[in-house]
Amino acid sequence: MILLKDILYKVTIESVVGNTSVAIHNLEFDSRNVSLNDVFVAIKGTLSDGHQFIKKAADQGALAIICETLPENIVNGITYVQVADSHSALAIMAANYYGNPSEELKLIGITGTNGKTTVSSLLYQLFKKAGLETGLLSTVKIMVGDTEFKATHTTPDSLTINKYLREMVDAGVEYCFMEVSSHGIHQKRTEALHFVGGVFTNLSHDHLDYHKDFAEYRDVKKYFFDGLPKTAFALVNVDDKNGVVMLQNTKAKKQTYALKTYADYKAQVLESQFTGQLLKINNQEVWVKLIGGFNAYNLLAIYGTAQLLGLKELETLQLMSTLESVGGRFQYLISEKKITAIVDYAHTPDALKNVLETINSIRTGNEEVITVVGCGGDRDAQKRPVMGNIAASLSTKVVFTSDNPRTENPEKIIEQIETGVPAEHYKKTISITNRKEAIKAACQMAQENDIILIAGKGHETYQEINGERFDFDDFKIVNQLLTTLNK
Image (cartoon, rainbow, N blue to C red; front, side):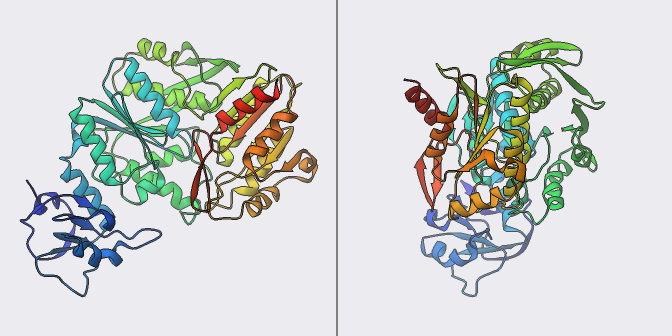
């Protein structure tokens, strides 16, 4: 039996109407899911305000309502708890409801603009290979030991996080690696979680449709490190100037990694090919299957985290050499006609630049680099011309197309991308709104040894148009097209 007063422990309460010593059933923040004896938490979201659905939750049998503003009509028999911040209250209540599972395992949060999925997923891979019971909360999937669940958000809501953490604890999981997004931090989804470590990858232009400016975006990331306890570690990339900012007010043990500057964990790229790269990490050489300078950073973050969590150095390096790339992150195939097709999630200017610079550093210079790229609708529009500039400047041919247009007109998005193309590169670009036709055009252009980069959607297996999701997998489509066109 769970009492309301027990899950309210540590919540900042402003007033109470009714009795908190009542037994409750479920905790919900979506009024559509409320049933008899549930607690409904009214959240002010970006699209709707849960306070508008308090009456609906009451009608459906809610025993208690948690809200920032008390409703005018108080229903007898229902307990109303007015709180300072509903997002924070939900996070604390969710942790209490599930018995604070984050305190029973080693939870590591990975944040930054690029690399979160790769670092968290490969840490999961590495620790599993080391024979340790491990969990994962990522954009791509959620893993409770060996059991996989579908992920819907980079950082799930507080209830979902704690639900899966409880399942992990019950399954004997010892380590959990979790992507921590700026949205998740800002909306307090990670509040009340006990982290033993935090990792910062980098910071570049993204999510400025949500955050008012870059400074706020940076400070939201910093807030995560500010909240780490002194028993935790904070591992940051100091080649990114924002890495030092993350450490300014943290109580955690400060640790750094870098390729270019002095750091606790240092790496050097000795050799790079499409099949992998040779790294020198803290004076030890290791061949890895992941390529590119951006992956050298990711692998260094993984190495540092593994060391801080107590894995032996040589075992860590040996396991790193066996790691496979994450789906949709520099995922490539080579066709019978010797055309290389690369699918990557690069949907920010920095990520696209990293991938194209990696391709250009490895190729001989005789091949064409044909890039297929778009930008998502209902998201940060400021980055669109920047993406256009990078694609055109670093490719020999470019096909601008749809990403997930959502509710926006895809042609308008493409027009905004095109405004960033320098005049001297304009002739190398074409625009094809239909993404499959755009990929087909790239395949038809490609000759032996050419390289096709399909950027932006990576692991996603759908395309979102006007509120509907349609099956769409970049990797499957380019594989089918190259196989068909080669015949």
